[in-house]
Image (cartoon, rainbow, N blue to C red; front, side, top):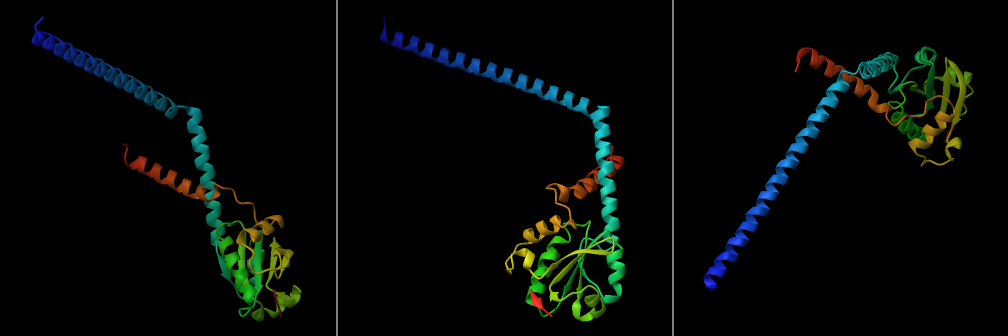
Length: 229
């Protein structure tokens, strides 16, 4: 056989194999695309079915109602001074501690270093525990209540429930007796004393979730598409 003829035949066979392989790859690609489109179509159908599910709609409505109720409760508490660490005067003391179910009042002295440490931690906790009122009162400017409450050492954090003093933290004796305790340490202690609730991991996001759902509803309606004294 002519060598050139053999070479041509082999070349044609190789080219044919390449074309066949390319054809197989192309066919496989088409099949994969069809499967992907079918799967996407099924997902869309399932989603539509879920959107029309009355039980799911009820769960969603109940969730929104619960978030709305919680947001309204937070608003009422904020109007009472919750959610921030505030300084009050002696004349406001009774109204403040009797006006909320749970309140924490820090009797402090402006020159005492440990009072400043307590201030820092209470200020960090106040926004996290909106169900409890956090306030501070300069002991020098509140001699009547300092005497009535038997305050001898500062800082002194007194815990109130419905206007009644039920417990207190005197200095740092319940916090390890050192200045370097953490905010978490104080938080755990206050939880044990029942004046604040243990914080849930997702609690901070609940009000934001309600606002987001509320805005989404609006959009849909518009567009159909220690120291001593």
